Length: 331
Ligand SMILES: NC(=O)c1ccc[n+]([C@@H]2O[C@H](COP(=O)([O-])OP(=O)(O)OC[C@H]3O[C@@H](n4cnc5c(N)ncnc54)[C@H](OP(=O)(O)O)[C@@H]3O)[C@@H](O)[C@H]2O)c1
Image (cartoon, rainbow, N blue to C red; front, side, top):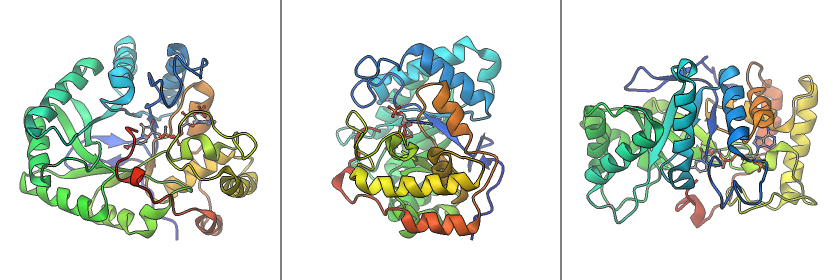
């Protein structure tokens, strides 16, 4: 049965509300994976500006970034876009992340230092959502919760979240935050038709129980679910998430095409994103230009019926079990 999906999600412990879909900005300023200034000569400041405008025009006002994306360049680009458009900036929700590298043992100081540097690049007094990028700190969940609480106390963050946390880790950090008088708002995870395991493992159910909004990264399989790549024309660059053999992906895309045809010609990426939204998860697809932003926004405002959702559940792949899903690559 389809989830009852609200019109927006409110982030626990805050008055921040987010739309049903956001935009991922890893590619903005990134060279090695996404080719800005490298193999993708079409990815420019201008194309990013157009993606920004088109997303906001479509009501897709949540932008996800991280201190490590393009070594801060993604945050810098968002800061410039916000500064250049103060009227619309007020509708934008910015989420960024702290990389809790194992050597950052003084985690409270490290987090506050990183956060201040992020805010400087973004040109903001506070960030709407601050996320721990992954479960790689050598410090306890109590120490991480204390660091997030200090950031909140100083008025530098409105809501707090994590990323790449398992069921056990999500429960543990939620409980540690609770002891500091805080609530865990989000868990950003890889979730798509190429990685359905967060649903079958009980992670989505645990998030729901805890009042945590799951955000889906790589929701179109790093471009593989758009239909523009295939076994004969694989995606360029590294793209290490969901890197199934394209022969297998081609079968999933064929089903997306078939189902999209029944809903007035929705394209594969729109069907793939609509499936994520139907699971009560907020996808944050990356968009490099106006066309991609507009096309992705076309996943909103309609719903796949239960029968087709069940068909998609059937063709979905559980995901690749690898070290990468524990020590992911700075995505
Ligand atoms: N927390 C984490 O550990 C983590 C990990 C990964 C990502 N993330 C976040 O999640 C966001 C999204 O994930 P992602 O960027 O890895 O993968 P994705 O959203 O599945 O794929 C994005 C890529 O697909 C292509 N694309 C997007 N829309 C398209 C469209 N309508 N038509 C055709 N191609 C389209 C673009 O690349 P091409 O045009 O080059 O094909 C784009 O860069 C990131 O930007 C980041 O904010 C977080």
